[in-house]
Image 1 (spheres, rainbow, N blue to C red):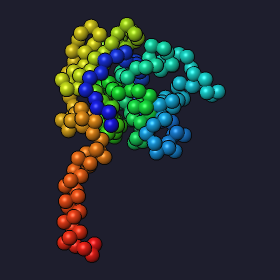
Image 2 (cartoon, rainbow, N blue to C red):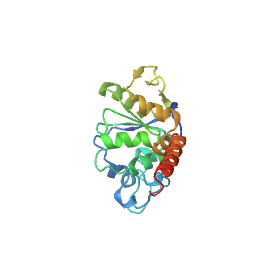
Image 3 (cartoon, rainbow, N blue to C red):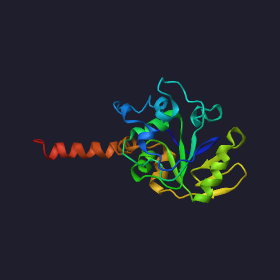
Image 4 (tube, helix red, strand yellow):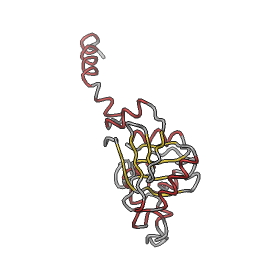
Amino acid sequence: MDKFTELSGVAVPMPLINIDTDMIIPKVFLKTIKRSGLGVNLFHEMRYDDDGHEITDFVLNKPQYRNSQIIVAGDNFGCGSSREHAPWAIKDFGIRCVISTSFADIFYNNCFKNGILPIVLPKEQVDLLMKDAEKGANARIQIDLLGQTVTSSDGVVMNFQVDDFKKHCLLNGLDDISLSLEKCDAITRYETKVADSHPWV
């Protein structure tokens, strides 16, 4: 998993509330078990028409937002089913951070396990960042995970809270598998001990 330390760039404004996981990645794309390749289908039903052509006025299809790594979203982002394909699609598109007033619990936790930083801020601060995002290329938001701050294009600094363990994992690029591999020596010692004391197992 890629490390997350700092991020600076143009943010995508998505003021809709209750953006659910089916909007993020429709169920028709859930057949894969690979984490890559889903970015092209992110927000598929809003990005493309019935013939597969891009809908030009959808925010992710606008030139200034095609390479954005940050989303500023409305309340209750990631609600709905618990599909991990949602953060997979977001990450594969290139998004590394989502800012909202609230997230669905399972989606929130899945973000950390996939290298995405979900930031919860009060509504007035999200509203300010939404206005920044709507400026497009004329405004850049800065995110510092180590210092736990978001800085608007006008220099307004906002502090956010994050669990210490989740922060540690993001800073060091550790997913569940990487955490297990850190214990490889201890696991090997245990397996050797069990094999010696219980050879019949």
